[in-house]
Image (cartoon, rainbow, N blue to C red; front, side, top):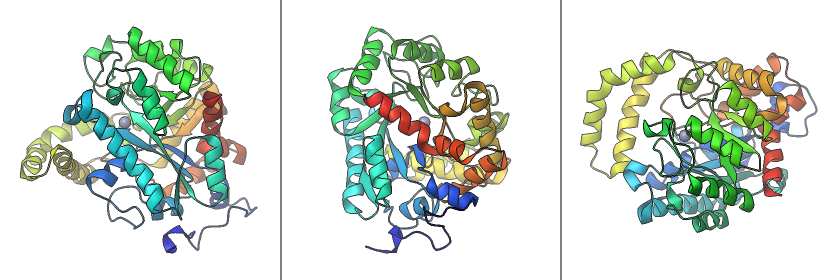
Length: 391
Ligand SMILES: [Zn+2]
């Protein structure tokens, strides 16, 4: 329909047989397991068909980056929309509708997908696959039947909790989560997800919840956007024992691109800076006259600017350190990628948006990974898990 769906002139075609890193990248099916662009669709009415001046993601840059499938995060912020109830459900429903609408409005670029074979078919047709996953189980409103409701709307993964614990699952982001695993209802949720064929995501859950999930699930378990705690000691990351247990289920650790979860010491520097800029962040929030979601956008804009100026740059090499760590620990079949684009206020300096994804492939190849290894990391492993969970 327009030039947004055309491949960039510099990009080699997918059938280019050369060993050029860009050709290898273009041949691979690239699946990003987590981006928060969904909220931009909803709160900013962002038009992804255009190259957006800000943020990390749009269709034009996704094409340039050789992306093939995007899991759009359906994120219900519990403090703004509630940890359950009609408001939380509405927030989730509106985001899911926005992803369906993206595909309906731009059929020349996007198709809504729910399965691995959907992704393969859509990619073969030269288009991008749009998928959805729930970030935090708030929208199921503590009702088992709502899991099937979201499954029918197309949702194919769910993490039980984001940064705020639910009554049935602990989060790594609050004090109560440290002691809270899955209660009986939480275990029923995991079994229901197994039954339906919805992947269970352990990103953001607390350690006890992680272990309860792994011990309850009969299907492969995934982390959609996490790093390794052995390299960057933040509670959001997975310990070596967790990575081993997750791999035993047949699952995949999709490594996040966010410096805070990748670079040792970065989190402490960020916290110090957060304290210094708190008055400016607060002022930006007060001056914004819109709703809670818009106030959050105003606060994040200040953070983005200050982090870029004052925090040390981190490169894609550090991301590959985490991928290496997973591969050395449990093998090539259990590593993947989950950018968290548009959900973070800071990015890697040379993977600052979706268009720069080939830099990841370049670094993997430089470190000696073969093309078949790269294929697995970029999306092949997740295609396998999707097929397995769907059985
Ligand atoms: Zn997240």
